[in-house]
Length: 115
Length: 111
Image (cartoon, rainbow over all chains, first blue to last red):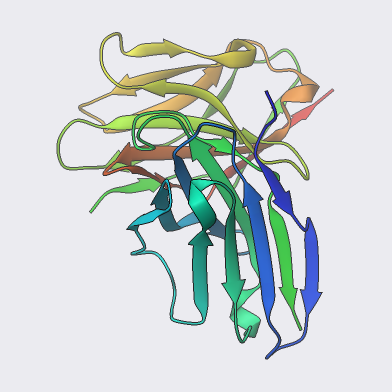
């Protein structure tokens, strides 16, 4: 089975610009998660989709971040406008069952650098 | 609130020696505990989990972890380290439909 794929693998943008990250989960996985790791720190939860619905978006930093999941398939995470502190690695993960009990399958991440 | 602590930024061990990567947790109720590994430029890979049952959990690549309720710990172990085990290791606690991760521990295995 194909794994979780994320695009792009790297993105370098200037402060104030917009960036959109994309995640394609494993087919059939209803649960989709976004996480972020800022340099050397813990991997922080951003939000959780069940199919196309946002189940939990308590980790979203502010309203500059917008996540969508079209038709319960792929997901996008848009940052507009980007700030320096948004730099980090953004991971997407999917799971068949509940993510708190079932293992998550992670993509390779998108490394975002805001200059 | 749930949380996880990995007290060591880096662990160094010689090839062939046993290794331990430490993790302590804080949860209300029964913990669901996980270990993941990240190799360079790759995503996190699931190693093992503890939900209930035997306190010693066996996982992928010869790793195991010991759940200790009294010490609220879930240390990752391997009897004999390989150079190829060098990577970043993350402990996580589950529940409420998501995982809460620690900051990670870099394991360096030297020939």
